[in-house]
Length: 204
Image: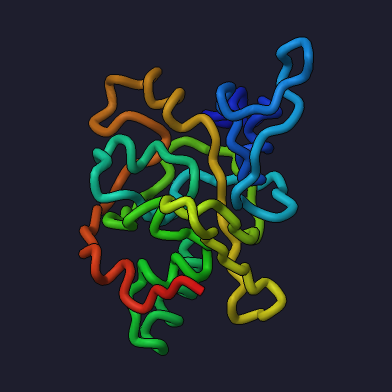
């Protein structure tokens, strides 16, 4: 039994893995007020079912302002092999790991300042969607341009699998007796300076 089985079975979870904003206020509705289209801003390509076993080591970047509880119950993660690939790329190009993650995972500064990195271990078996990152095309906050990021999945060295794990927050609310609620236990949280997470970023 997987801790997030119910959340994974919810059709909205796969839509979220595809990068769709499934909030009701964002949906385009029909004459009956029923959602028919959700805006898509990024996400992953061809998400497939992926089982995560107990003891698996995972990594996740998050915004500097969120709590550790929020950090470890977020949906987007990567496996150890993917994180090590980021580290090698960062070392070769003399950039921070956070900046490497921006490039590989298509995370523009408008989405997150990438101010935290958590290394964690899975304590309850989980279901995830696994796939390659998709292109990003979103309006710039100034309203005069767009932020576009291209996923270079055609280049093997730039191809990185990501995980979307739905339902972590809901599961955490059911396990208040744990030292850190939820199915994922943080091992260590690293703080990342804002300038390191954006050094080398260019708007093209």
